[in-house]
Amino acid sequence: MNMDGCMKLLTGTSNPELAKKVSGYLGVPITPMEVKRFADGEVFIEIKESIRGNDVYLIQSTCPPVNDNLVELMVILDTCKRASARSVNVIIPYFGYARQDRKVTPRTPITARLIADVLETAGATRVLSVDLHSGQIQGFFNMPFDNIYAAPVLLNKIQTEFQGQKLTIVSPDAGGVDRARWFASKLGCGLAIVDKRRTAPNEAKLMHLIGDVKDTVALIIDDMIDTAGTLCNTAQAVKDNGAVKVIAAATHGVLSGPAISRIHESVLSAVYITDSIPQNEQSKNLAKIKVLSISSLLGEAIRRIHLRESVSSLFI
Image 1 (cartoon, rainbow, N blue to C red):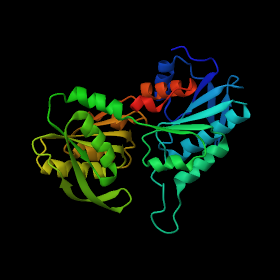
Image 2 (image 1 turned 30 degrees about the vertical axis):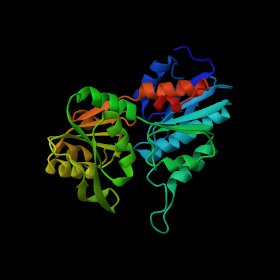
Image 3 (image 1 turned 180 degrees about the horizontal axis):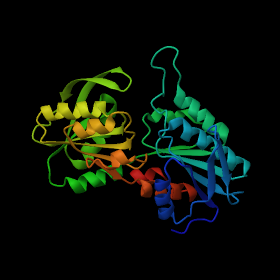
Image 4 (image 1 turned 45 degrees about the horizontal axis):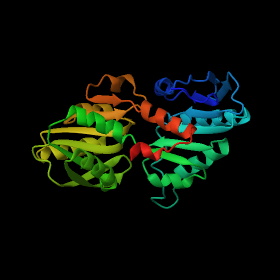
């Protein structure tokens, strides 16, 4: 793909493999950059070639370790600004702190808004992310923000793997109904919703299933899988209600804490996630976890931004 020479593609250390794939899609090499950490943990950045007057596209997920990757992102942004880049477009496949988008109790922060302010101060001119946990976060930014969706990537895989089988799409909570309804309409299948109540962070108590999953392959759709407690409880409830097989699909595989062991011991047959977050060896070795790449999706979005074309038409 022949891109304008004024594009520079940079990547931090959070997800270099995804960045390499995006680079291959665009036909644009990754600009060499040195990322060092001093003995006390401070980050040092040096870009090894001129980016003066260029449009920079910086790929960096703020995934675990979230704070390390976030600080690294800020330092790279400041480096680009001081190196006289014309613009710095930040590509954040996984947007950390997205779940802290409102005050849920008194005397708590709205950290997603804080991150927006810090990104702008550090020098970002545009942000692109994938499947924000809460779409309202876009309103925290005083700059263009593109929230793109990995649904087409997941949908294509599901259509290929389960063609001809009777499916039911399951939303693990009321907040994910719109996402689940979209999948159900595209696949021409039924929809079910799990009614739950969250008792504490990363914990949820299941209530009951609304809809019919009996004698179907149940596909649980969500935006992220963190500790997998909700997912595995949902899968068990769906199986108990007569599903012949239970699978799951989510954009972001955070998979923290006991997630891997929970998925391994669960009734789930397969869990499809994307490479928005790099996986460790433990998750790579678990056969149930299938990783799909969003590199072509990100690459096409970057290409369209750079050439001033529509990004939303990717999903229409």
